[in-house]
Image (cartoon, rainbow, N blue to C red; front, top):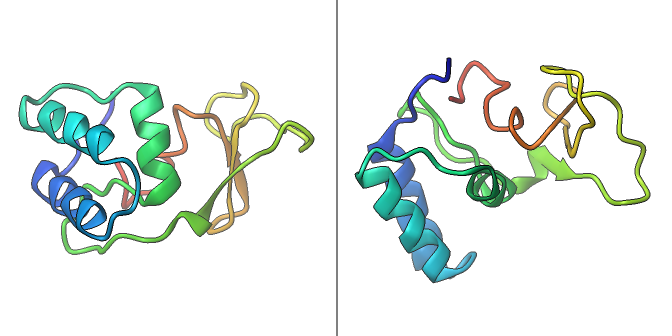
Length: 112
């Protein structure tokens, strides 16, 4: 079971990203609409968001940059995801672990 995201904080972070012209405006708008309607973000949206920042459940924590989650290239070794054992797609340098697209946004106690 996934812990719900802090919608207000997540929207605030996305709005800052839009203002700074980081990412694609239309993609951010779509994600904001889904969050406001309490819809679950799909894996592609989670990947997009996690490449640029982190989704937090604790609103006192500020956003971090994408350097914490590095997407593995086609040439990189793909160790098993630390959460489910499937092929990983991301490396987290905060805790030296590998994660698949589904678990990269939820592996830290400060994240969903």
